[in-house]
Each structure stands twice: as C-alpha cells, then as structure tokens.
Length: 376
Image (cartoon, rainbow, N blue to C red; front, side, top):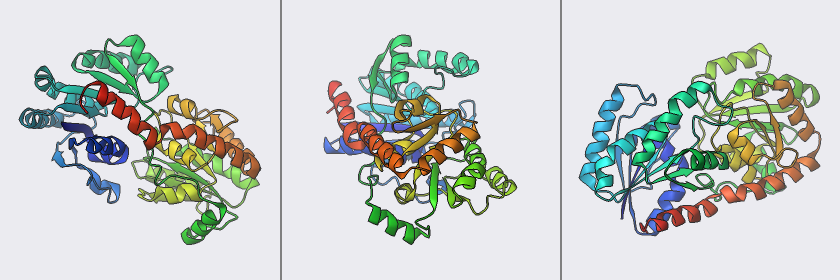
C-alpha cells in the first residue's frame, strides 16, 4: 500500500507522526510526505524516516495566494502517484489536501483528516464558529474518516458532522525519550547542564507566540521568587514574541531567573531536569509537551483550555488556572515547590494518566483504524 501524509509544514510530520509512519512501515506500506520544508527553522529536525518527500509551498494563512500554487502542486503529485490513502493534517494541509484528493477518492483512495484541535470549541470565539465550523462541515463530504485527538472534539464531531469519526489518544508521545529518571540520574543531569540541585526549575515549552502566552509565566515569577529565590523559568521554543518576552523579563528584573532556550531537539533532558511543567496557552488541542512532562512524572500547572482539561486533573496530576492569572499560576507553583512529597505524588499520577497517550498505545489505535479500512 502507498500512503501520502499531507501537512502544512514538514516539521509537523517530524514532531507528531513518527508512530503512524512506524506502524505503516511495519505493515509494509510505502509512506510519502507532501509539505513545505521549514526544517531549517527547527534546529536540525530531520524528516529521514519516510520513503519520499515532496516540497509543496503551503502557507499557514488559508487566504494566502501562494496556496493556489500549493494546491496545484499537490494535486499533480496525488494524480501521478496513485495513493491508496491520503492522510491530511493541519488546517491548510487538511483543506487543500482533501480538495486535491477528490479525483483520487473517486478512484478508490481513502482520505483521512486528523483534527489536532478544532478552531471552534466550547467557549471558543463566535467568529471561529462562524468561519471554521461551516468550512469543516463542508469538507466532511471529501473525508472518509475524521480523526479527533480529544474527547471534547470527538463528542462535538459525532454530534455535528455526518462522517465517520474516530478517536485516537493524540499522536503518541515518544516513550523511548520521555520516561522518569532516578534521583541520581536527575542530579547528574543537572550538573551536566549547569543547574544546581537547589534550583527550582519550571519548564514551559512551545512556540513563542501570543496564544502560548508565555508572558503570564514570566509575570508569575516575581511571586515565586519571593518564596523560592532559586526558582528559574526555562522557555523552550522560538517565535515572534521572543523580544517581547525578553523585554518583560528585563522590566521585572528577572534576567537571572528567566532563560530562553530557543528551539531544542533535546527537550527530554530539560523535562527531566525540571521540577514542574508549565503551560499558559489560551487554546490547545492536545499538547504533546504536557504529555511528555507527565510521562517523566512531572506535576503540571496549566491554563484552563480543552487540551489541558483532558490531561490535568485538579489536585491529582497538577493544577489549572485561567490563562492570564499570573497570581494563580504563582500560587500553584509555590504550593508544589513547598512540598516535594506532593510533587512526587502528582508526578506518579501524571505518568499513569499519560501512558494512554504514549506512542505504544496510539500505535495500536492507528493500526485498528487502518485495518478497519482494509489498508493493512
């Protein structure tokens, strides 16, 4: 069988779809990728685990005129290669991928779309419902199976759309990289990385942008430092708000307490060196960085949104806060840092919760989906 994975950018496939590719290869499938090459921006991320890669000049904005060229390029590829399955991802890749697959679908190809978090959701902006809900409803006519990665999206899709809907537990966090270290291993790791055992490390991972809202984490730090003077906030990622975040840290006198790591390909080291995993995102589908932290037995302090609600159980695996409430974030972090016993208890519960979102579990869910369609 011959499979095409479509996404707006190649880094999306690198970061989120290796379990799917591994499963397909295990069943003898040939796997191609069509996406824009953005890997130079991702610090050496490599798409070296698929059989063929096509450069397609997608742009993130659906209204960008370059997407006309991208659509034509993709359609030419699909018509020429005669795929058995076209598995689309991301908003632009999902729309253009399904439109470009219409002829192939009429000829018998299966077309899947993985929704990594609908832009319309409970409590979401009215304008998102007005734009994205009708669009997705229309696109369902060109979709054989719509895959959702959160229970909230699954229930919504089952209620609103006339299409086969499946639920998978995310994209599969890498258990070969993300697992708990012993205290001795953590101590050695901190020494290697230049952090003291007495440092209280908060890790926040994600693209630096307004939605990820890292500025709230920075604004929480002065209160944390009052109680725990050795506290440090590590921000892993790059993006458009970098200078704004640096300026805010300087304004608050936090230069020695806030560290911007840039884009990292060794995040498992930072996760295991951390005491707490932190996220202040306004919107999330199902955040892989939180699952990875939970797999490493780290308690979580996170904002209230669809993805975090699914993963974080209040006072069991961590704490939830409104996205812009810096005082609440600070109080939750202090409460955990004050009690190593509670951190350990929450961390153990977090790992148990996260295992159902691990690659070992998602592998079998994807296998069942493809088997149900007689592809493997």
